[in-house]
Amino acid sequence: MTSPPLTLEEAIKLHGHKGPWLILGYRAGLRACEVLNPKGYHSLHCVAYIPLKIPYTCSLDGIQASTGCTLGKLNIEIHRADVKDIHFIFINKENGKKLELRLNYDIVKEVIKGDMIKASKFVEERPLWKLFKERLYD
Image 1 (cartoon, one colour):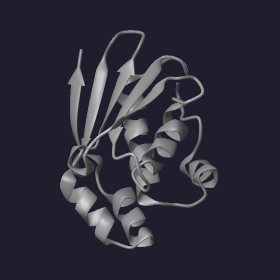
Image 2: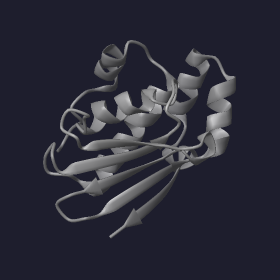
Image 3: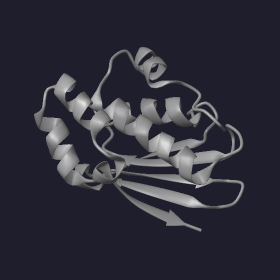
Image 4: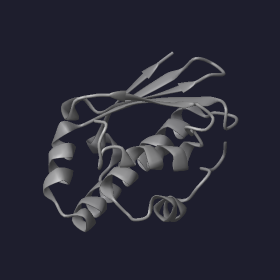
């Protein structure tokens, strides 16, 4: 895939508003596509470990928009996690490579305390390495 299925603006339209968790998921998905370089929409699989409640589940819309992993294709899975252990594992099914993106808990605290507009801007402008701890598995 050379470009995401949806732009961030289209993802916002799909989701209904611009929120920090949507952007976090969107950016995580973009990074997974950049690192794992899937060739098609069925090549990438995502396992999301998040609290199963809003606003954390909003990250799933971002992942779906940026990767093409969807519930309909069953190439995204959701598992319950504590707010201190939010992470996403992306798997390239063509070669078995995996990328784990573990959300920095300090970011979670910052996003939760801020208003939605400020928090959205915060996660949109923050360098990716400050948002996530990244680990690549071959």
